[in-house]
Image (tube, rainbow, N blue to C red):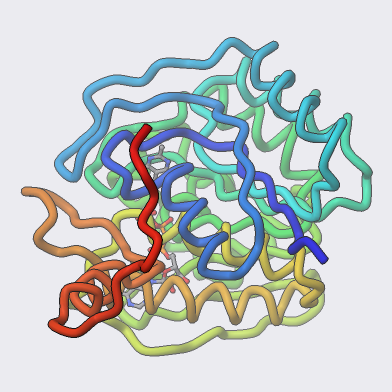
Length: 292
Ligand SMILES: Nc1ncnc2c1ncn2[C@@H]1O[C@H](COP(=O)(O)OP(=O)(O)OP(=O)(O)O)[C@@H](O)[C@H]1O
Ligand SMILES: Cc1ncc(CO)c(N)n1
């Protein structure tokens, strides 16, 4: 039987650390088939983002429509969108799907390197058009502060929003915007604790902190792993626990030395697997693929 197929609607990170590229690695890590509708292109490396190129809204819808005509979409993860026109296209695309499809929204605003990835009109459009359709939303703490209305613009992210609101207060405010559950991720806190709120109960999702890891793409990995676990049939709280553990492990194995800036997470532990393959005596494929 084919594994569940999970769709990421998100931006491309040309450096391979975050965005669609991280999502596909997280899907593979979780044992689901990954599919993509690319919503924006970034020219990006570990140091920063030098350019963003929007995808025509009709083509975002077409990517989702074409997948949906052929393959059963078991869950959707939504990442970087960039503009309000893109947000509206994603809303149109979601309306094509079975309404029971779980939707995880990672409201990406700023890259690890500090570049703004969402304009202010788009932030408002996410609140109005997408959050009410979400099964789970996964803002980090500064994104939660901005979405909950403590600050007027996305650039406020860099200032950390309004620090006077505690995490539970923020989770309540975000839940009131319509998602079934809220996970405020903890990568930006002293203790890396993800806070889960389903409208009734709070849960603290704890685990080790890896201060020496590499965290570019941790949020993308987390939201994709969460969507994958919903597709695999886990209830949202359990899916959030697995997602925290997988993101944390990906940070621990992160490729610190890859570039000059914030190194990417490594959900597949590629570095170690590469070393293993280069060990003397390691098995080589008996039938290597032929170049044609
Ligand atoms: N240093 C760390 N050690 C362990 N787990 C971590 C660490 N940093 C982040 N995580 C985990 O990674 C997940 C993503 O959290 P984070 O708050 O870093 O997202 P983000 O800021 O959106 O990420 P991104 O860098 O992609 O923008 C969470 O489950 C968080 O607990
Ligand atoms: C494309 C893309 N999506 C998300 C993030 C957030 O890490 C990023 N830096 N780039």
